[in-house]
Length: 168
Image 1 (cartoon, one colour):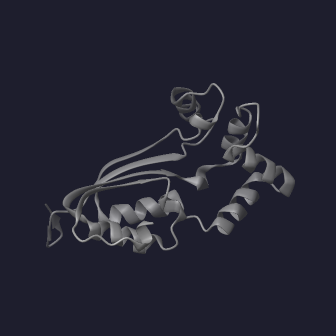
Image 2 (cartoon, one colour):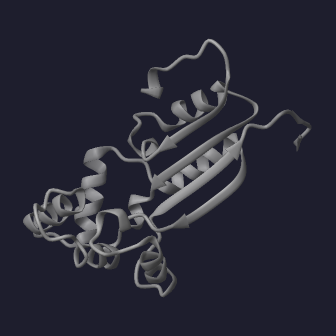
Image 3 (spheres, rainbow, N blue to C red):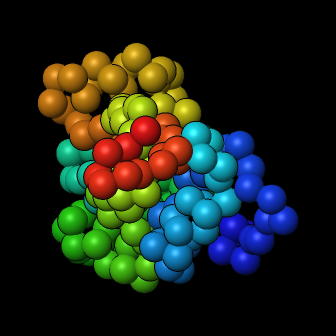
């Protein structure tokens, strides 16, 4: 786990893929990342903004789940939500609190405070877990306003130096 990682020397880059939302202390981990990267080094983050997993997006996903074993993470959410007898928004909020998840907004705020943003994109997240849905299909649903973009893709660089508020 990066939360316990210490490096003898700074590294050229760090990749965090669907992991930051789970860390106990987001600011500590982001500080460790910033400290572990050489000046000019790169940080690549792919994350799920779970707070955007609203009712419309959930229903869109659930309608496209593959038939079969029903053992995927989206299947488990659908079953837990149905068993809860709660509205989707209440279910997902309680689930995220129980899991101690950080929001995409908080992760991006922390990254932008520590790194120069080169790329920040939002887009498809669920297509890999859905039947006959491609990234393009999901993007079309996002573009039409049917669902929200849940994936965050971020690339940032550690500042080489900062003098009187001027970054170089």
